[in-house]
Length: 332
Length: 160
Image (cartoon, rainbow over all chains, first blue to last red; front, side, top):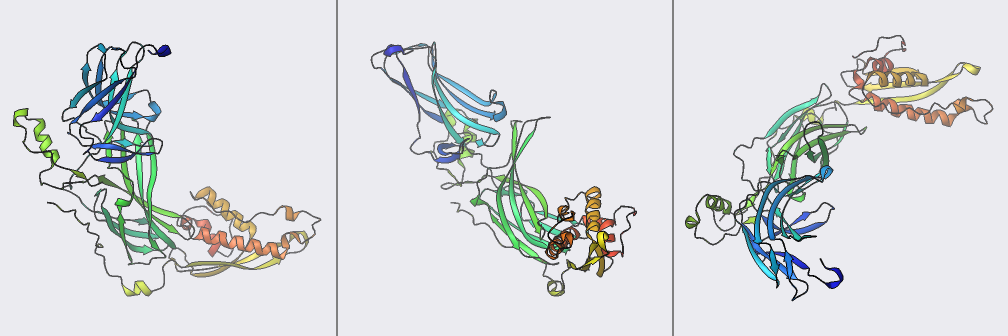
């Protein structure tokens, strides 16, 4: 309450303890702008300070409590009112009372579970953020700080190639092959197209990467298709017996890992679309789903930090491993 | 210490191509020429016919080199049959030119040389586009248009 300069108002600020050392990554916001945010992984501790600065020094700030929350939520753009929180932690920093001076409050959310990757899409957004709130009689003062979470995976045990024969009877038969079905975000798609029968006049062939975002359940399901990449692999007319190689580097494209049925709210899947175009601009295509995953690089030691943290989570503090925090670099 | 792995970008193994396939004639040869416009009839019952010659090596066509004479309304008939029976989006024909059929024109109307040439080009584009379509090649109306002496408008529509 600050009518005519009376009363007291405050500013809230959140500062992380490892702000100097923690890596920041770029993330595109809903309106298309790219901003940098602190990067966290599943199981990492989120700790820092909430700084409350009184605008009028000397005056007291009455409040009904100061708290900080760590929230992971899914927001569907067509249903903005309902936020689906899948992680919700709160720490009380101060009981209802008064502040006479600007003050700093420490907080720590230990080994927080962050099960999903941060995602900002066409119809849905998944975000993690800290929110510090000073509760007051008329209006609360709060500050949010978004963070970005990446989910890491390792090389899958089973990664079979995709190999299939498709075509139009008596007109066009091809056999296509992609070397894997699961690719990491910096991987290379290596493949080939083998022509068994060509009775149409092909002009060129390309391979597209399509991202499909699916939101909603039951009767109201929305699919949003976006062509991330178009890559020409052949120019000119092939004949029977010809083999066309494919070598598509994924690092050049902005993609996320495959996300399947996240909290039963949305999915993000990727498809390779092989397109052949004939001389009359007719398009013949074959779509195939691929799984994308995010690879983490471990730079210093062979034991991953995630494994250390995972083991720490289930041990009592006295058994905690006595090693300094290891640096972990995200390959993105 | 693990070094960043270099991706394996070697080509996949493929069968060597048979040289007769590589240097042989293509199996997609299809060329249709629309040429030699001739005006037949007298007075008000005149109309123009065009020679339609198809050369192909596609097995779906019985005859590999065949010539027939067709008029504009035959092309219209083919377009209507395909629009009704097949799921294709049929390409457009050159215009019907109804205005040119009205009397008291300064030129020769639909028998004007430049108009006939324009129409000839449009019909040639149309028939080449449609004959190369894998779904149109299954329709009996297309085969009758290209390979039969005359079009039987009472035919039974169907697939080849």
